[in-house]
Amino acid sequence: MQKLIAISVFVVSIAGAQQNEIEVWNDVTKDINTANFRKALDDLDLWKQKYRDSSFRNDRDALYVQAYAATNQPAKALDTATLLIQGDLNATFAGAAGMPTILRLLYNASWAISHIPDPTPDEIAAGDKAAHELLAWDQPLPGVTAAKWEEAKADMQAKASAALLYLAMLPGMRAMATQPPDCAGAEAAYTKALNVYPDKSVLSWELARALTCEAKDTPDKVIAAIYEFERAAAIDPSLGGARNDPKQVQSYADNAYIKFHGSDDGLEQIKQEAKRMPLPPADFTIQSANEIAEAKSKDFADAHPQIALWMAIKAALLQPNGEQYFDQKLKGYAVPQLTGKLVEAKPACRPRELLVAVPTPDAAKSPAPEIQLKLDKPLAGKLEPGTDLRWEGVPSAFSGDPFLLTMDAETTKIGGLKTAPCGPHR
Image 1: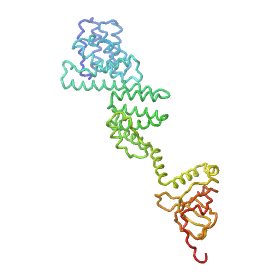
Image 2: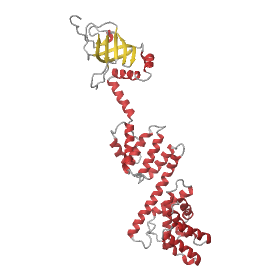
Image 3: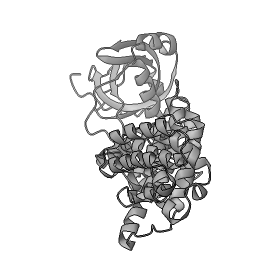
Image 4: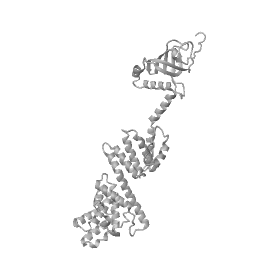
């Protein structure tokens, strides 16, 4: 771009200058043509010192802008360009001869605004105007071939688009930079920007970060955050070139989903949906791992209420305060009916104690005894291990290691007691 906008434009109005000023002007022109921009700034300062009120001060300021930009001084470049941009550039740099100067000015101002971390309102206004005018420019430069012009135009539009995207992101970046971060403000800013630039993955990514920030106080925000992380990974995992390793973006997005949902079930559907829309639909949701576990627990409790009751009791007893729970909530209180399998009867014939396990329906092996039933009277015979039992009882003792809950039970309240004769000599 810089090479295509020839420096020869500066000679157009030279006839109206004094000879001494022409010499300084030529020095600056030589400096810029040889890319010696540091010296160009020195010569521009000399020109300004000697001819402060020069009739060509607008041309001089345009050269200042170019030199500041080339020496990576964006704030100085944009501040110098601001007064020129606020005016009518076509009147200031009139005719075909002024076109390269205007383009160079708009180009450098667009570059500058996207490199100023905290621009002022005037800088924002100037950068925004420069970027919009540069983006809309479609008049080829005189003397430039069609192929070179298309190359230059693509470069111009890229610089203008980058500047406008930066300005769209700026409110969100500022909100996240406050202490503490204004997460809600950032969400609103990035959402607004995403509506303007729906295909910019970096906006989806930053919106996801803002939503994650909000999720600390509003947990449901994490669902929209996951959507935006996946959106960013789906449309451009390089985030517009901001990430050297796009795989990290995809990995982060997928891990966020798996951590929340508990598995990658449904992940592909989320990815496909995120590709289609920049923002999640109003009814979009993802089940959390806790919600899935609660639903499974409810379904299990509906299908196996006695086992679910025992699992809840056992879980409470296994807590660090299990002894306290037993003393305050269980001991001496009748427990609703439970079910289990006989592991061992003591003694084997006419037992007065039954050791029982409460296996889950999908248990692969015989579980260890968990409950000891102390009967009010001995049974008349013997029981086979593995017998299914149902009982009601009153907890009377508890041991945490090894785990065993003792319950007093009346034989009349035990179902499944199918005794067999003990046989002779018993």
